[in-house]
Amino acid sequence: MFREHERECRRPAEGPRLFSMMRPGHAHGGMPLDLPGLSWDPTRRFLRPAVLLLLAERPMHGYELMGRLKEFGIGLGGMDPSMLYRLLRVMERSGMAESSLDDTGSGPARKVYSLTPEGREVLDMWMSNLDDLSELLNRFKERYEGLR
Image (cartoon, rainbow, N blue to C red; front, side):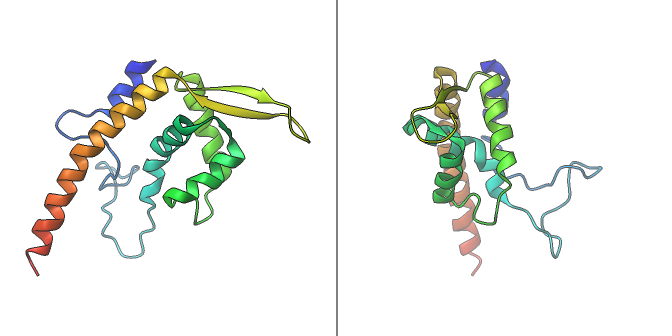
């Protein structure tokens, strides 16, 4: 299970794949992002690590996660909640998260998700790659600003 996500989160010599410069679906790997009128939300690639981080802080149910994702700028444009619930199911099947039913409140029981040790490993790996990406982006920004 963990090995599947290791490949996704750790890409040799490239770091994490947070923001792809190409959109999927194009015959040559994607559509360039510089097309006029292109609508692309880079936060979609940030959804999984943001959920991992929130679940590392404490267990929570999907509705609460949806609200907390707004702290990262995710979902401000009206993200479809089904995207989050699909991700939670995938994370649960892959062993990164687990759920239990909480029936202590008023109303129907809700699934509460928590991070597993495997999920914590994926989050730790993502963060180590994020440091490398941050350095790369800072060098890019400094070089760009040198053009002004």
